[in-house]
Length: 349
Image 1 (cartoon, rainbow, N blue to C red):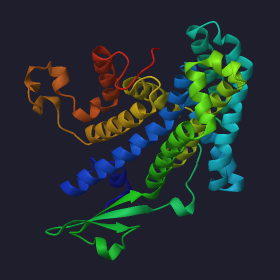
Image 2: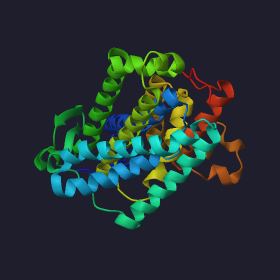
Image 3: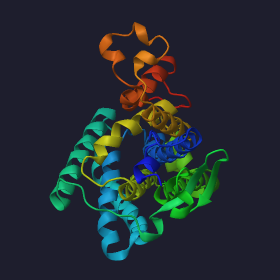
C-alpha cells in the first residue's frame, strides 16, 4: 500500500500515471480552495473598505492557535465555530478603535497599522504557545482517507470510499488514499463561497454593504450606520481567515511561521484575480493551486525542457519542482504588466 507521503505529494514515483494525474488534480483543487478561504476575507475587506490588510495572514495563524486551544477542551466542532467568532470580534475591535482613526489619512497609515498588528499577533502567539509547532490533530472522524484510488494493472483506476482494506492493495495493485481532512476543507471552502454570494446578493445586509461601497454618503443619509457596516466587514474578513486557520492548522501544521508562508501567496491571488473581485479570487485560487501542485510533481531539469539548452548552466541544473514556489509571483508580474487591475478587477488600489 502506498505510504501517506504519496497521498499528499503527487510526485511520488510509485504512483501509476492515471493515479498520479488524479491525485495531482485533487491535491491542486484542495490547495486552491484553501487559498480561496484565505483570500476571500482579504478580498471582502478591500472591496468594501479599500484597505489592504497586511495582518490578514496573522488572523489565519491566530485562528489556528485558538482552534488548537479550544479543540483541546471542547472538541474540533466547537473550535471550528468559536475560533472564527473570537478572531472576528478582535477584528471588529481593531477596526473600531485603531484602523478607523487612521482611515481618513489614506492608504499608507492603513498599511502601516495593519503591518504593525501582524507583528503584535506574532509575538503574542509566541509568548503564549512558544516558537515551535504545536500538535493540532484532526478529530477521529476526519482521520484516514476520504477515498482511495485503486489502480489495478490492466484494469485502470477505480475509486473506493474511505480506506481500502490491506488485502485489496497487495502487489501489483497500488492504492492511493486522499485524506479526509482535505476533502472536508474543500467542502467548507465551497460552502463559504456559497454563503458569501448569498449574503452579498440576497440579503438586506448585503444590499446595504454594496450601497455603502459605492455611495457611502447616501447610505449614511438614509440612516444606515456606515462605520458600523465597515467594522462588521472587517470582522467578517478576519473570521474567514481564522476559519481557514482552523482548517489549515489541523490539516498541515500549526506553527508561528505559518502566516509568513501564506501571506505573500494570498496577496498574489487577490492581485491576479483583481482587487475586490470575489469571483476573480476564486478562479485564480484554483488555477494557482493546480498549477503549483502540478509543478511540484515534476522532477525534470530545466535543461530537458524545450529551449532549456539556451539557459545558463546554473539554471539548467535546477528542476521544475524547485521553481514551483515562484509560480504565483511570476504569474502576478505577468498579469500586472498586461492588465494592471488584475483579471476581473474593477477597483483601483
